[in-house]
Image 1 (cartoon, rainbow, N blue to C red):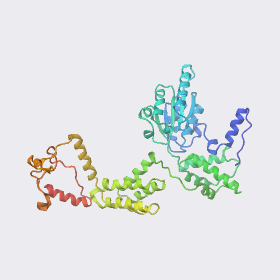
Image 2 (image 1 turned 90 degrees about the horizontal axis):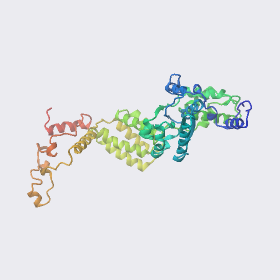
Image 3 (image 1 turned 30 degrees about the vertical axis):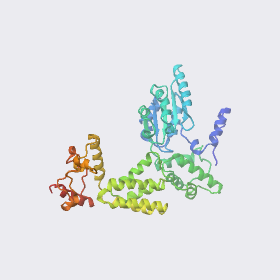
Image 4 (image 1 turned 135 degrees about the vertical axis):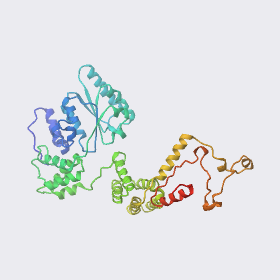
Length: 446
């Protein structure tokens, strides 16, 4: 790729840095060095934004930069490094450990004691640190020995310990919008360290890259660079949409099966079925499948849903859920998607009731509150003569010998709980009939 050279550096060190920059990936060569050059996140980095004010005053508190890949977490950390008067120490949670952290902290303590100023510790992928590793530098963040900047793609409430999180300000970085990515790409085409003097790029190709990148600035620049290299090898006069499509491949989905986005998509799936929205339900189900989630996990969620959210409003829902699970285990992918899709649509369209869910929770709460209350004598088992003499089973009325198969007035709960109700059926679906039947048996007024 043609890259316009800068003027010759003045030292051997400068020459080394210059050559390293020239051979670096496009995304690294164009990494902003000033806050004004950062694309996106205007609510944070606009002149009156909270992050911009802290950087300008050089009084940055300990912060966590949370966002998806390519959102600009490392870029913002590098901008801080280039503007702060503090000593900036980068550190990788993947490559480093507690021993290295202790060395950094000790150096920071000495620097502070000798008037050398503050130390900013940048921990990339801080979510990779376990609890013990986070605890290792917690007291040094608390006493101001180091100012922490942590970068993570995981929800901090999942990834970080509560004590560490409470001592940091969390700044969330959203994925870059397509318009912002297009701005980033246009800048790369004309920048001296970008494609300036190299092959031209169609505007349509830039917009296609912005769409393919799905909010990831690094991915957008990488795609641009690879497409330009391929176009040059093939002797093309310009980079067009065809080149972009050929190098972009299958569009990856933002989905971390161990992190927040996984829970967000699962939540959307469940809430769509609960909201009787079959189109949304099948969409979110396929989002999970296409992102590589385990179909058996999805089926397990639908098995739970069949009882938790449909229940006796349509008892066939649980039957179909079990059948779909069995069918998928026989069929596998891709044919197993048919029973999965059938089940998701059925559950979304079925009448809903959470009465079963409420019933067992109510019963559980009463057990926790009252303990193991004795079983009434008339309900006790009486397999021996002695137990019968003690009154076990005495007064029990066999329901099948009663009119309508129901012993009117009989009680079945412990005496202290007599009359309490835990299952209150709704009027929806089959549960409406169950409700009318129970009202009759219980003697409820119409």
